[in-house]
Length: 108
Image (tube, rainbow, N blue to C red; front, side, top):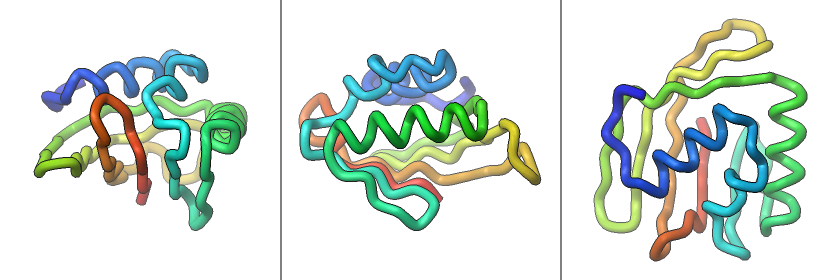
């Protein structure tokens, strides 16, 4: 990783690259929402399902390139590579943080 990240997000991306759904989902609050590919996934059960499906479908790895934080908002620019057309691509992960948990993640 080249971006300097808050510990919560560094742990999340490390778990993501290890495809460790339990550790990935531990970063999220119970009522969190993930917005990805035009769909919202609300709550930990839906988020875990989304994680498992995207890992299986894309077998992806994420390399954080840049990050910024203002208050509860953190934005991380990533290089994403996997089994999808156009790989690798650059995406923005926009996090809303509540305490030591992610309450919202928007990927685009």
